[in-house]
Length: 77
Image (cartoon, rainbow, N blue to C red; front, side, top):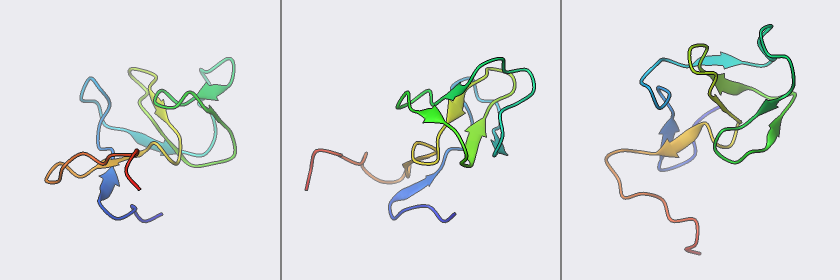
């Protein structure tokens, strides 16, 4: 999946670990997967996962504003 205009794929978790791109929950997860950004339950989609911190980002939240641009304002039309 290509990044939306003005955004790029997250490269690392909040503790600077690299992400894995997964489509199924890791075997060490007992319950479901919840996006750490929007709190949406992740199921049947590609998502980012940090195996060290257990951070997960859904297909929508895996993209962030490019660092060389102003932050994207979701409230603007």
